[in-house]
Image (tube, rainbow, N blue to C red):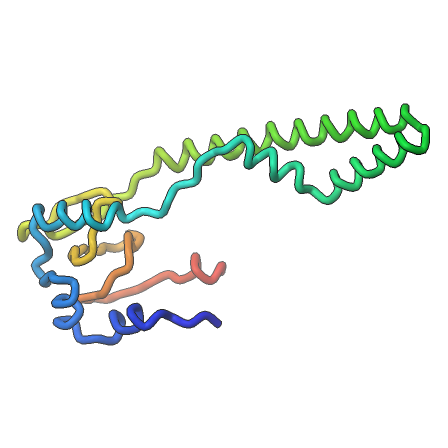
Amino acid sequence: MTKTPLSQRWAATAALEEVLARLDSSADGLSSTEATARLQRNGPNALRTHRVNALAVLGRQLRSVVLGLLAATAVVSYFLGDTTQAIIIGVILAVSIGLGFVNEYRAERATAALHSRVHHSAVVRRDGHFIKVDVTDLVPGDVIRLALGQTVPADVRLIEVTELECNEGILSGE
């Protein structure tokens, strides 16, 4: 079981006013200029995206235990004088690595393309009004509005709740 850092436990158990004060915010949200300054200081609300790297894909292909055993078998066959068998095993090895590389590289490129096309937005209170912004533009201290069917766009502290229901199945794998 992993321990939750003290700062995260504090944010979950402290009084709402204390959390808002520590974030230098209020229930009315932030102004656009404050949000822009925090975005520049903290960076976007996003994890580093996965980059497709051909060398990394090839490296994963070459780390296969089965392919290592085949390569060792080819080397042993060659030194025992059975060059025909060593060449056949080498060709099988090369074809296997090539096909695995091509398939995995294509899959990674397709995944990266899909990921770059998906954009999520959140309704956030800025300058006293609720507006829709990209979730990467959320900053600490923002007040967001969640509605039925939305995913939670960041770590949040609930201020006001009416008939809250949460499907945690995606977290537990149910």
